Image (cartoon, rainbow, N blue to C red; front, side, top):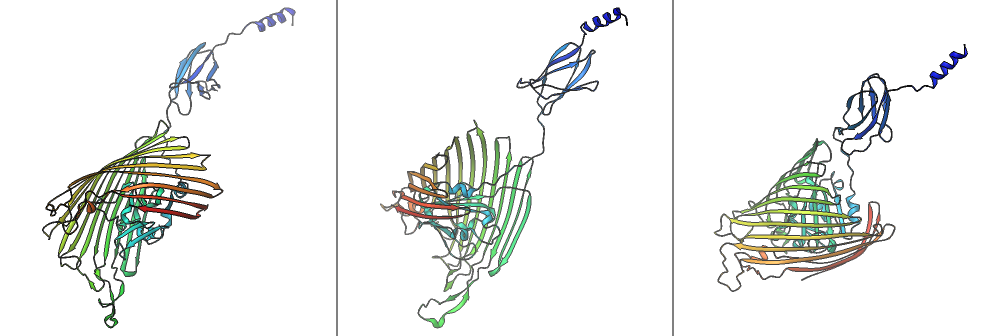
Length: 567
């Protein structure tokens, strides 16, 4: 090769080579941030990825098509020419997935144990496979006594730490069941098939304004798709049948429960024939007219309207028919007692307001109708066919504000209760028709210190009540005749503390002052010998308790001293 040719080749190698290409950056169309890892495909089959800053560079000499794609974004295709510089903005495209439920079982029992109040939680797993009733379950709990007339679905009331039934508040899904007429709550009208758990709060630290304590009954919600049928048959021809259907569809959860129970309750007993000291006429006989039948329907539907708003509705119907047997040596054969209860509520929950606040609003309506029929005068004084109807409508709100390890909450409730008696045989009803308006306001605080080793709770419960009775007053001529209208303010204060001493050992102490407004019967009396007293002062309780709790897994030991004084 001649020196001239070598020189020519060297000169050509040193000359710049002209290249053509495309360069640019890929951004998020909404946020404007660079998108790394975007796949770039050209029409000639080459593939590239954007860098950490969302930039790219493609070498090419001719015009071509290029497609940009990334998971979670809409693909975009451009026709580009060489030596171009472009900015590509990809539009987010959320990926539609099938419904995925992620659930976790809260340990409610452990949560309640960490509160200052002395409480017991009965969860569904504790009674689901047993044939029992709500009064029987509660009667086995510490500090609880249940008074029952005996037999399946017999009238049953609760006492906490020696209190009366009127001094214990019973709630069903945060709806107060205690009627203004008084007498406590009949536990036999609450079937266990609808119950998820029972929270029993004893003494000064309870939630609510019960002087002796409170019982919160929580109904079931749909937790899976299943169909269940349970049935049993036992002594005294006792028959139980329950069926449940639950499931989910898209953002909708539903649950339906049907329950039936019946028993003859014709147990045997020794009848002394009314002659206690004469054993010659004693005989064993069966209880008559003591049969009972109940049916209930429960439904619950909830839907996620958005990621933070949930709408739920529930409906309960309950029917009960039973005989009134009378006293042992003079049994009644025709007297009957019937009851019907309906409870409806609709709730809207708004979660994560400013990432700290949760708010819930509920509208509810309850209807209780009771009928006592003694057309032959076997039980009461004279022939009776009386009907009693109690209707309650209310609107409740509950808001919670989380501040680090502390929790502030506010509960408000306004409700109207109406009681209407009706006599179908007697000329006038034995009780007055009565009305009660209640406005409730309850702020609560829960402070936690030293990584949860100390917990301090306090609450204020204010209630304004306005009562009125209507109808002819047979005591109008008497200076003791009650006024037809009365008003009162009730204020309750509570505080409690829990301190972790060492390991599973903790100290609890609570102090409370609470008040109970008089019932309609105490205020207005009846149309017989009882004259009401509208000047009756509310019952006041001053209570405190303190004790130690040792927790070892599901087993615990409590030693408590309590003092309760009622005025």
